[in-house]
Length: 413
Ligand code: KG4
Ligand code: ZN
Image (tube, rainbow, N blue to C red; front, side):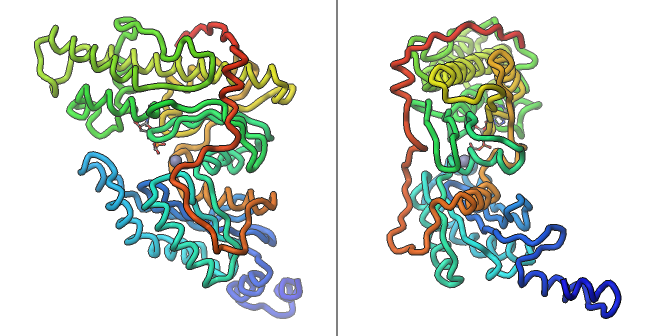
């Protein structure tokens, strides 16, 4: 205040001097006197990501080093390779964002790092790097659950009140939960086998869509979405998976096998070899996209009805957050919109760059935990990573016991 008054007339220090002085009170240009700034570090799978975020949600610095290109060449993630790449990149990635954010490491309120769930070798790199930094800087450590971070991302971009639903659907994730607080989750359902994006990728690969001139640079799911627009879903009519199970779990392996059979049959009929593009590829894409959408909607519908029945929701305007690569599919998004309209809910999706793995969601989860005062560690002696770790309290059995029949929704898409 003294210096600001002086800038008004008596004495004019340089802008840098003003910022340096104000920063000693945790001030950052463009934002008033902030107290909480968190460095977030993510290495649970194949992205080395980090970000510095303040408590108003300002992203002061962000960097992602993606390993996708390397893993594409080997046809999947080889954990020791991912570990080596994380090791090679983590120091540079964190240093980059600390310099970009123009804060001094001593300005950090805490360091937040994904420690569960994920690939053991990858989690280990992020954790040991973070613990070293925590020791050097003498800052608190906030261990982060990767799925919790995905689920809370929406509170960074939208004003959302607890409780809200979160549906995480991507290549590696498939879960449905009620978020009741920063670290208070009810797990309503999850995939019993693979994630929907994984299934779409496998079907796209079996259809050799990479050789299709319009789809060669698209992910499997995106290629399916693109081709489906030219196809007729009624050419292959099948019922969605788990029709008889009155729970909110998902399953995609059966669908993948069924599509394999259909593709083999069609190859025979069309007299072509595996690796050539079927003339019916667009119809198959339209059918798999439709069945996937119906399956996801039905399980989510049951979750909404169950939570309504148990009075777990606010009187009006419950939010359903859909996140992950598969949620970016317009057809599936449209199907979810039909559901939210029919159940008086609101559908929200974080922006695409925050739907996939990133450091911002980890740092923001750290801010949320700092604000709530939960899970902030000053003693890091016994901290370990956990490759497998469920999210919240699993109530899927209770949901099943309620045996809620879901009314049919007209999917006019
Ligand atoms: O969230 P994400 O980028 O990464 C992780 O899985 O962690 O999701 C990628 C997955 C892939 O399986 C991809 O095929 C699928 O999301 N995907 C889509 C679409 N875009 C990406 N699936 C359906 N429709 C899309 N438009
Ligand atoms: Zn993720």
